[in-house]
Amino acid sequence: MSHMDNSRRKLIVENAAFFIFRLLSGVIVTVLFIILAFIIIKGIKVVNWDFLTTYPTDGMKAGGIYPAIVGTFCLMAGSAVFAFPLGIMSGIYMHEYASNGRLIKFIRMMTNNLSGIPSIVFGLFGMSLFVNYLGFGDSIIAGSLTLGLLALPLVIRTTEEALKAIPDSYREGSLALGATKLQTIRKVILPMAMPNIITGLILALGRVSGETAPILFTCAAYYLPQLPDSIFDQCMALPYHLYVLATSGTDMERQIPIAYGTALVLIVIVFIINIMANAMRNYFQNKLKTN
Image 1 (spheres, rainbow, N blue to C red):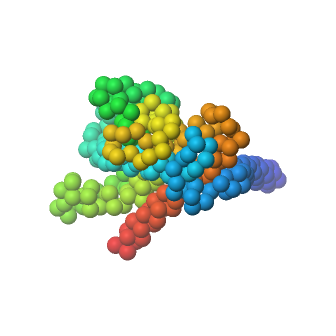
Image 2: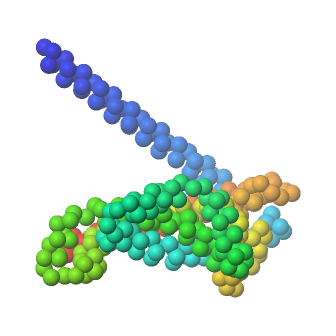
């Protein structure tokens, strides 16, 4: 009788725990949909082809956000070019080559700490190093390098975790067949880890695309109704453009709808990037299954 009571009690506790988890998940999803619905309802009124392809006019009280869209893509591409190769190679070295000594443990601890540093600190560091010391000035390259530093810890950690998920038996089997360590990593380990590595790259791009503080100090222009000519020019960017529209200006009634439209465009861009990255992830997974 006591055994049956204990089993029933465990079942009740388990069902209660699962109910709480489902409730919390439902609350999170509901809040997410409420936020998205609010932005869509407010922003869809101003989003049209002219809004996406024209320059801002009348002190950003009218016109479109085309320079901000182009600037955002430039910063995302620049940060990816810097952070992705360096982060992936660092993750490979830390897991596949370096011994698990005090130095590597210290590097991992510092990498985790860097992931938690507020983005405004990266912005101040980027301004000191890239803008002032290296003489890049307020420019796309300074903003891209700063955002790349911001994304680098996340890329390193996700790459390392993706490599940890690959069983050692695959490495041992490849080495036993006569492959070198480099060949094993290139032909066996990286293809298997690539879907999870791409997940980390998605997260890094998502964080970079919405950051305001780093570009505030390094490249973002308040009002620049033209496209940059080189990587050493300033640019507009959607996050900073949204911040300016929502906090500054003399005609907030005209600016706030544009701010909602800008927010909606930024969300759609992140959504499209996630779809493309998930398609790449599925491609590599299917390629592994066929091989």
